[in-house]
Image 1 (tube, rainbow, N blue to C red):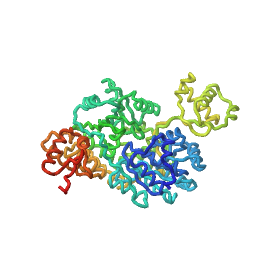
Image 2 (cartoon, one colour):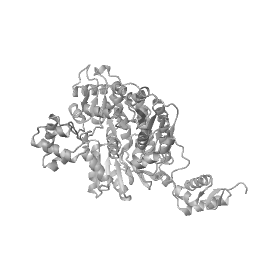
Image 3 (tube, one colour):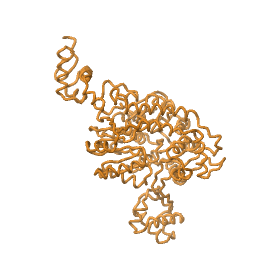
Image 4 (cartoon, helix red, strand yellow):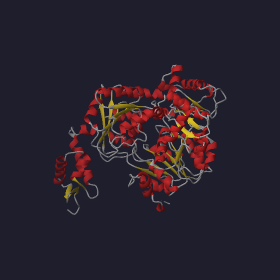
Length: 636
């Protein structure tokens, strides 16, 4: 099929790009040939295009499974701006929104359907898919299906059942980071018909990976930002610290803003825009920031706090230098950080009795009684929950996640959604609706300001409407409610409240079992991942980058030459011999290499490489052939 589809025209006409990034074309052609395909592309490698281009080339409907509700919203909005029809489904939508999205899919008016994995637990939903013209199943963040992975989500195991509902439909699985065990597990869990992996190297030669020890992290952060130019991201592990560090940097004369999942949607969008446009230099963020962000000129990514896995570190650090120019990934490590990493294990896996108490309290909190609740969706104010029961938030959140992983309910906290409106009446019918003055003014402004209101739900801003009409936000809110009561519009107010989606009826605490696969085995795997992070950050044995690449199953031929350990080794007597060995290796490649190329690869002065080359030529190991240093030919 790939031979008769002009994917270059699709790319150019819809995205404005003249060429594909490495491996994108190969993955797309594999999908168009009807093969199950696994793509391992690093952060910034353009994973979304590998299913969006086939969606347009294949016609019909492409189903995209993704765990991140905020990311699916962003992608759908971006596709709509490009004229590509796409919809999304998750448990937080109203029934009317769900029905409209399904109607579009059934009538062939949508090319892509984004779904959260918990939707696949509904047999009614999956049976409905049989009547759709589905051509491709794309699984984003595919590492979530593997119990070996750092972000295992049991709801992902439901994806394999789609193969029974949609026989013959190929699967494209995508992830930015996966160890060899996870790679094989993904293909097994998704029932690949044959092994088919396209993987780019995890190496990012333009990034210098640095670890600095510091008892006073603020001073080290200022030094790092002062020594670099361009945009920066500083990652921390708590919402409170994002605000504290951003305030500190602003006081020191460095423009900074903070970002975390608890901010209102408008605040997130504005801070993200200011940073992307260069109005703010530094964004201080939790790991909620970065997914789907494509800013090419980030010169430094700083990990002020250490992440709990190399997978997360690699993804976050990889947001530096997407334009290919020299950039830095810095970890600032304090003496107490080893202990912090160790405590994360006990925080992530609290005692089973504690988990059962959290289940009971959560059910009471949302008024679900024993024997009821199956299929229910309940708003879940996590902060109020912790306050009411005097719970430590980190441990309570992890207990909720373990309950989700065990199948008792789905705890969803990725829910920031903007207010949205759809007009329910025709233009003629609107004239006959009797409205009060405020509601009429708001309706008229909606019709003048927003397009597409009669066909779909459209994001709106009550604040914008209020400022244009000279009304208060509360007046606009009440006017929209009045329009809803008159059945003129369907108004869905904004929400950033997490929710619980009950996949079973409530049970008594004594029956709440946390399986060994979810608890003991996952705890052991997390312990190994934490040990790998500790080795990367605190170890001094060999190239830091090579240790990270080995974790991902690669076998690098020589040290990176750019990490802090490699730079330090240049100052030791062993450095010269290491450099000699590297020059031998690069000269032994087919056709040899120029001295300038070798110097650039090793990050060494050209004069130093010339001296080493002379040594090896003098002892008869190498020769200069034209302008290239290569192995001495046997004819001599």
